[in-house]
Image (cartoon, rainbow, N blue to C red; front, side, top):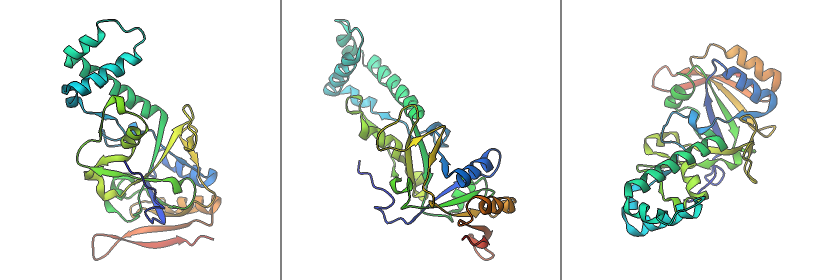
Length: 270
């Protein structure tokens, strides 16, 4: 699966929509004060197909594929018995159940070891304002796509069918497929993702999330746009002026003649 970054796709800025209710004002304050972003685990996402490995159980009906899986399981068995291989070959339902159990285990591993931050080139998508910024009451953060870690944000691939793998071929490429493939019903998001490893499972060359937080470059945050139905604009401006006065702030407004938004500047930035 070819993987490209925002920079390779000519994207100058990336945007992240988020709420400004409950604990979320604290997350925005952390971003401004400490130069960090909060990256959730995949189980927090709203798509139950997202970031999960998918295995083609129907392929096990082919003798060659079945034999590959039998060999794969035997190589990993603690104490294989002489009749194990024959039992797996003659009981396809058993082999499929074993693959399904592995799939669940790998999904749990992904959720425990990886953190994902979702971004888009668009800051005026009405659906994303509704979905991720809590009905336009939240904010949209604009980041410089040339700054760390946004320079390493990967483009998401959209497909109609699940990105199937087999257990014997499961490795880094299949893991990337799971993390960077979504249903084509989400194609309007034009998503890019920063993928980090949890502090309990660090990996060289990959950002490390400590308690879900990943450090960003000093000047990565460029602008904060306040949703058109957000009533805490003054609080947000005060936060920005206190911690990062160079960052600009604007408020989205409903366009008077069409379905869209315009903007009013609240803080120019320095």
